[in-house]
Structures are given as structure tokens and as C-alpha cells.
Image: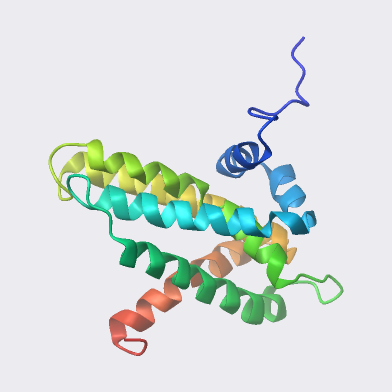
Length: 182
């Protein structure tokens, strides 16, 4: 009989938590929420995701540090919006969440986005069908992970509310497109 208490990469908690978040494993998100020492690790995952996306988005081996910086900045704005707006709208008033809990859980929720680094090795450029398929699959996976992170960090009981709150990630993008944040 297989021991189910041992997680993959259990000896390397950082990797184990990234895998757990990628697997949408609720106990991993609850563990992250409770571990105040994991905040720098969550931020590291966001940086890794930003670098992976910028590396994967450029043909060849180019790396856009500006994109990675913007990705991290965008995440900070989103977590701030989540912290300010989310609790009052969707959470039970007797539950407390802090910025660190949201930063840790949503930071590790970015783990699937790290896989976008492999886009730079897919031939055909960004407009090619394989790129579109990989970006779509990883994007949906990342959004699902983010939804679970938001649901657990804000104690949201309704999955539709968790999806709506996670979708606030796109608010800064919309504001940039409209020209309000440029």
C-alpha cells in the first residue's frame, strides 16, 4: 500500500508547494496560508513566473526583464485590490485574512505559469497553433489555481464568487488598455 502522506518532492518544501499549488491541492493552500515564513517564497514564484513568461514569449533566447518586473508589479497591485475589495464583498465577516496570506497563496498559484518557459522551444513563433494551445491550457490551469488560492485565502464558500474575485487579476489590464494607468 502506498503512503499517501508523502508529497512529491517532500524533502524540498518549496518545490513540493509549487507542485501542490499546481495540482490544485487545497491542503497545500491551507498550509501556505498558515505559514507566515512562506511569503518570500510566494514572491519568488511570482518572479519565476514573470521570467518564464517573458522568456517563453520571446523568440529565441531573449529575456524581457521589463516584462518580468511589470508582471510582479501587476501581481502586487492585484493582491492589494484583492486585500481591499475581496474581504468586504465575498468573505464571511467573522473570518480574518491578511495581505501575507493572500500573497502566499496567490503567489504559489502562479506555479503553472512557470511552465510557459518552454514556449521558447516550440517552433513557429507566437502566432503558431502550438503556442496558442500551450498558452490557453497553462492560462486556464493558472486561473484555476488562482481561483483555489483566492477561495482559500478569503474563506469564500461560493465557487462563482471565487472565480469573480480571481478575475480581478484582469482589472489592471483593462485599466491599462483603456489608458487609465499608462
